[in-house]
Length: 214
Image 1 (cartoon, one colour):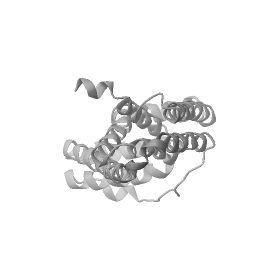
Image 2: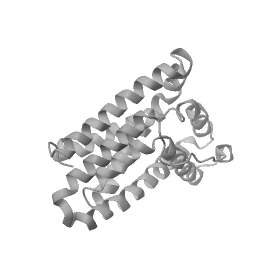
Image 3: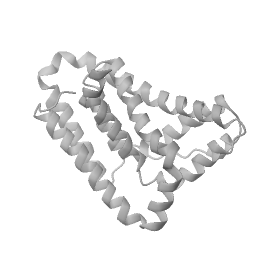
Image 4: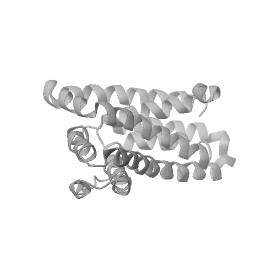
C-alpha cells in the first residue's frame, strides 16, 4: 500500500480523472445526472451500482490498453518516446478543444427510478457520454496505461474513474452551478483547459525524456 502512494502513475491517473471531470460539455449536465441518481427510492443501491458501472467500463478499456502495451513490451527501448509523444499530442488536442471521438447522444431519463441494476447501466451510459467530451485526457491516461500490463492498465483506469467520481458525487451540482452561472462559461472553460493541458503536456515531456517511470 505504501508503494502504491509512491507510484507516480497512480497520482497521474487520479489527476487525469479530476481534469476529465471538468469537461465543458459535461459540467452543465451534471445536475440532471445527479437528479436521476439521488431522487431514486433505492438511491443508495443505485449510487453503488452507478459507481460499479461507471468504473467498470473505464477499467475494461484500461485492461485492453495495458494488454496491448504488454504485447509491444519488446520495444521498451523506444516506449518512452512513443508514449511521451502521444501524451504531449493529447495535451495539445485538449488545449485546442479537439475531440477524438464524436459525442454520443443517450436518453438518460429512461434511467430514472430503479435500483442497483439500473444504476450499473446508468453508470456505464454516463461513462460512454463522458468519453468523447474528455477524449484527449482519456487518450493521455490510456497511453500511460499501455506502459504496463492488463492488470495495471485496468487499475489505472479505475483510479481515473475515481478521480471523476469523487467530485461528481460530492460537489458536482455546486461546481456545475458556480462554473456555469457565476463565472461565465468562457472564463472557467479556458482557464481549466489551459491548466489541464499544461499538466498533460508536462507529464508527456517528463515521460518522453525518461524523468519519470510509468
